[in-house]
Length: 260
Image 1 (cartoon, rainbow, N blue to C red):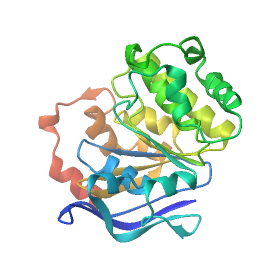
Image 2 (cartoon, helix red, strand yellow):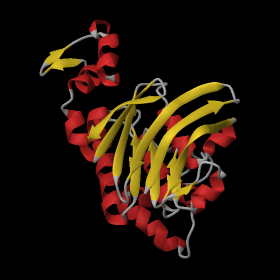
Image 3 (cartoon, one colour):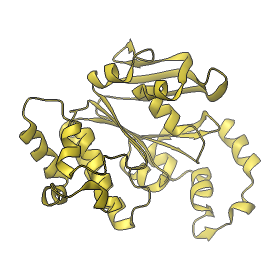
Image 4 (cartoon, helix red, strand yellow):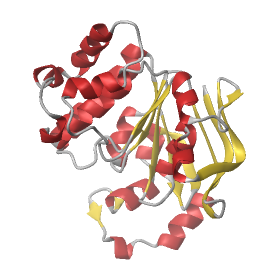
């Protein structure tokens, strides 16, 4: 469905951020994109959604294709019309509007009440809060609203940027369960960026690991969960039950293994 082929991304026509990134997401697939802060994950999502153009960035090499057609030259509004929606990191909302008004802002259909009911079926709490001013919601409630707003556009492809950031473990589990339901019931393809590597891989089919603007490792999610480098880098575990500090992790050795 989506193919990214060796893209390079530059900001202000000079700052090279992505260096030959390639990845694929199949129809109704769920793919996890992992990496530390600054690895290039969010830039990858913005390259797909076209939001790079709002930040003086562009794809300067390689291609992004949806159903075999290039989209890397399109404006964000054209890409939305093709069925790609991005839920931004940091819970970007209209704080002065109510929950329902925020949801309606993403509306793209014929029956707004039917679409609202669809969102409320995934997030029942939002129905109870639909008249509440959004700025007074908790972080978890705002995140539910952001994902719900993305669903109002009936996306074929949903880009989720750090949907569990700053949430309690119970809410993280709830959000991930809802994401898997959306994928299954709406047949929506999902590219998921999340710092919580293990829980992201637990719901994904496939995973990619980025470092310094490159994909350095990829494979089936189940295999990545058992990968010693993933355990060491994200959990500080080199052996089951043995926790290490990050200062003890031999960074150059890990890179040698990944890039090899």
